[in-house]
Length: 147
Length: 147
DNA sequence: TTTTTTAATGCATGCACATGCATTTATATC
DNA sequence: GATATAAATGCATGTGCATGCATTAAAAAA
Image (tube, rainbow over all chains, first blue to last red; front, side, top):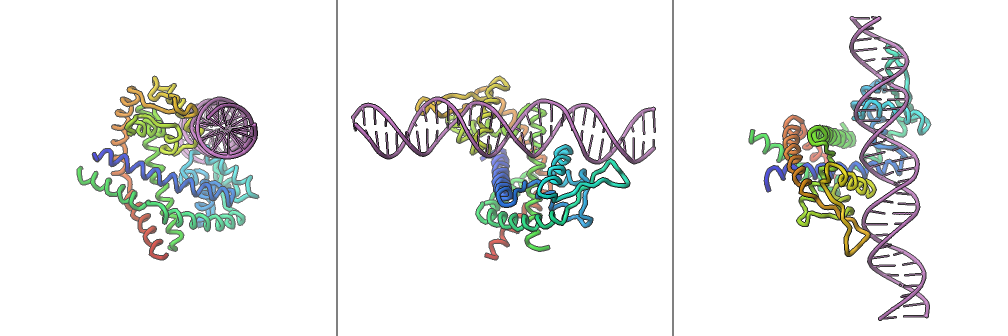
């Protein structure tokens, strides 16, 4: 097999694994916690921050969403589920909106984290993810040798 | 760091890498070939098949889309770009629709493949993908040891 | 065996929704 | 006042879910 086909096939495997894990996570979070994967990420990043608060701008980059998508997601999350996050203005810069995780949000996050860990562990065990990933690394290394 | 945080962080790295590569590919394909990543996958899978034709159902599983999304994508692709694929009915089972890649489609695919390879190579070299991936593999191994 | 009925299958479509892009609004900085 | 920045908003698009339609397969009745 040519090295080009190799590269493409490896990328396809990589994509497939990501999609499978991602869909599985999303499906289970939806079923058990009525929560989106992106909503989980927002809670997680907020909770990980010492101050428990982040600007929408920062959050947007962490979650990997566009500015408008993050703005709307934050609004949805504030309204939904009895408010897992809260949107506050900054005193020093009133353009900014800062999102904080509420006590209820922390509680929900704890529950969700259990599910996420469980699901990831199970999926990792059953999928042949490591062979695909090793393959990916090998392709990358061989690319670098040929420079 | 706890093994649970380890698992989550590894998943986050994995997701981030996939998103970065995927966005980069999508952006460049859009700019150079006016083509979506999913459209590229459709052409690729059709071309890889010896018969050069696949049922929508099969295509749907390969590309990783829902049934409705695949149905619409195939229609868009038939209408767009002077028809890179063609939708035909089956004689033996008139419920099925089969997609075939046209000559024009094969030509386009060749062009696109060059870009995809180039982009993947470049992105792989610049990203710190292997540390993240090795991390992932380690996590999986340690999970299996603790069984 | 032929006909009739019931279930399954493959795809298309209405609908709701999350997302990105482009633009606007409000505030801050110069 | 002019420019820059953070977020909100209008709009278009792609997606999934639920549903409907046409066709095929399977089972029952004749």
